[in-house]
Image (cartoon, rainbow, N blue to C red):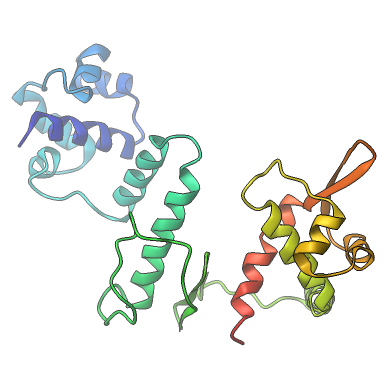
Length: 255
């Protein structure tokens, strides 16, 4: 057992219990500085503190020092939170997607109890946005992956839409059944998706959608947009609360 491992365990288990360093120090009758040094790997707690630490954390001494795994779902969730809190800026979403891809694979194989229907992948490094359609539907829930979109739905707690919601859904589906609307939405999304500050003109959208400018102008009056004006020219991007729609619609390609 290495010093670093023990100190990592103390920090991890303290956070799992929701204790501050000060609260842990008070419970043990030591100083805040002592706990801080333990977690920073500057020193180890005296052996006499190990039983008290194990009791406070509600683990065995073997679990405390890492000889026995403390991994349960709660511990795993906390480790994931710790991992994401240490990531560089703008890396959280990509890494969340990579984990979601792994979870899709796990769910699709009943926790790796069934064979994979595709080549084995290392989701920490592999290309993540090129993917065919993969759907798994079970009584417990369903998950799907298509290109760069991943979807999960839990069977438990499913609620059937009420009448008003179904009318809203009908109106939405009718809007998306218009080919010009779809072409405009996908073109606009494709032009702006990689840059939150990017806005484009109706002419740019028309060129990308292979539509006439006046056809695009008609559609732009019907969909939620964020608009800004530069030197008398209006520029557009999909409204933030609406920008998930193009990715969601990709799940309908094969149906």
